Length: 90
Image (tube, rainbow, N blue to C red; front, side, top):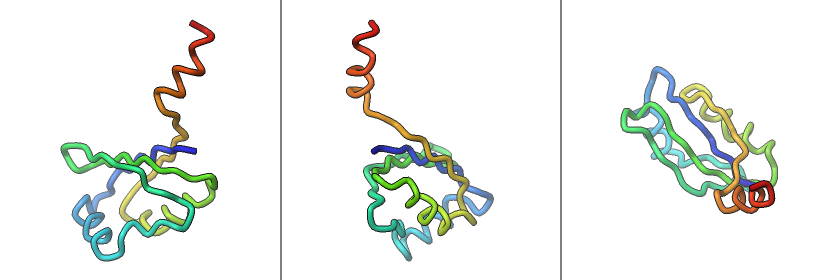
């Protein structure tokens, strides 16, 4: 299943997030997979597309970043999947 991890950087800012990422990597537990990410132009928010079959893995991952980042984890589907589901109602 796909999830969008919406991240809002706290007061320490993107610099500390990127420093930790450089030093320790993403620190993802096995079974939680990074797909892609986008960062806003102000370096205040990040949107990470993640994939897992075990939602509980997010708590293991986010606990290592909570001092720097506020998280919202949102289940998502691809546009193609959405079109397939919506087609019968159109």
